Amino acid sequence: MPGGVDSPVRAFRAVGGHPPFVDHAAGAYLYDVDGNRYLDFFGSWGPMILGHAFPPAVEAIHQAAARGASFGASHAGEGDLAELVMRCFPSVERLRFTSSGTEACMSAVRLARGFTGRNFVIKFEGCYHGHSDAMLVKAGSGVATLGIPGSAGIPVETAQHTLALPYNDLGAVQAAFDAYQDANGVSQIACVIVEPVVGNAGTIAPAPGYLQGLRRLTAEHGALLILDEVMTGFRLSLGGAQQLYGITPDLTTLGKILGGGLPCGAFGGRADVMESLAPLGPVYQAGTLSGNPLAMAAGAATLRHLIEHQGAVYSGLEDTTAAIANGVAALAREAGVAMTTNRIGSMFTWFFTDQPVTDFASAATSDTQRFGRFHHAMMEAEVWLPPSQFEAAFVSTAHGPAEVERTLEAAKAALRA
Ligand code: KE4
Image (spheres, rainbow, N blue to C red):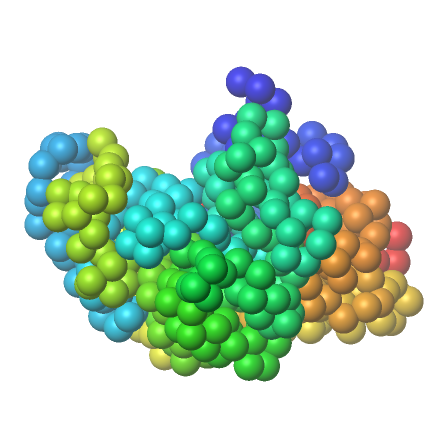
């Protein structure tokens, strides 16, 4: 297995050292094969908002497994989870399940291109929408210049239809819409896809009015606005960032929490757009395990709990995460370590920089070597942070006062060191 991993970030290349091998997990903790117990701050990169091995989800998976793991045919579980999603996301009039966030974003972009008949898409530096070719594109030289491949194996021709712009810069988006129009002044841009709160450059909040600006510009030019809520959906609130910031996108992508830890993604939104999908319309999209009964069951058990206990869940996550993020920020000040803390709800990042972090360029001013040393010291204290400066940390409902105390103790020593 190349690098010993099924996903690169797990190899600890960004922080050094050897990653533990997990034996099992429960609540807020990961237990490795050597008998160590780590406090978990990445929660499988977002899904485990209710903690690991959440009993109702485990029970739901057991029951579904006994009824057959996969049918490749329609079943009630798909409709059950779809209804729960639509209760949380009023903008989602129709939806389709996939097996990953990558597939959800890839499908949504293809759908936007098919629906509008346009080829160009806009994404933002520091935002990650999975590893499909059109999304692994870096910014070109100028603001409105064509994208360049962000990975080997992506033809330049593919990259050239993706514009990668700076986040939190509406002028750059206006310039791109001005630059990409046909002779009749009709826009050539199919969609703008954005993490409404960025998690993949580390945590970065949208500037006031930014998302509203994207909504206005896309509507003006007939381009679709796709909010990638794979990470923020059900995390920042039941209705994700679009509920928090009051934005109605044309399409939304979901994943992570949606499957309660099982492979699951989804994309959905305007009925007229979604009904362009095969078998109703000309945009092809498919998946052997899409709507898998076990993922539907785990997701439904998770969403039902979040819906039924939403007051306690989100206020508890807010309080616990604020205590942890702000507590460590105070310890950094005491230790004279430059740190910028960005937090929205239960996702946060400690950037080792003295600058405000509002986009990828400012995030990149962080001292990644220092972050690596901090990460290593926290691992020594059995506190497992996401192994990269440019990732968001996540707190679950299984994190409580004991976990706050343990984290602050470990961070105090680590920051001194
Ligand atoms: P997946 O294909 O990994 O399920 O989802 C892709 C994706 C799409 N959109 C957003 C906003 C995402 O954060 C992700 C996946 N996030 C990364 C963590 N930065 C997954 C971790 C990994 O790649 O191993």
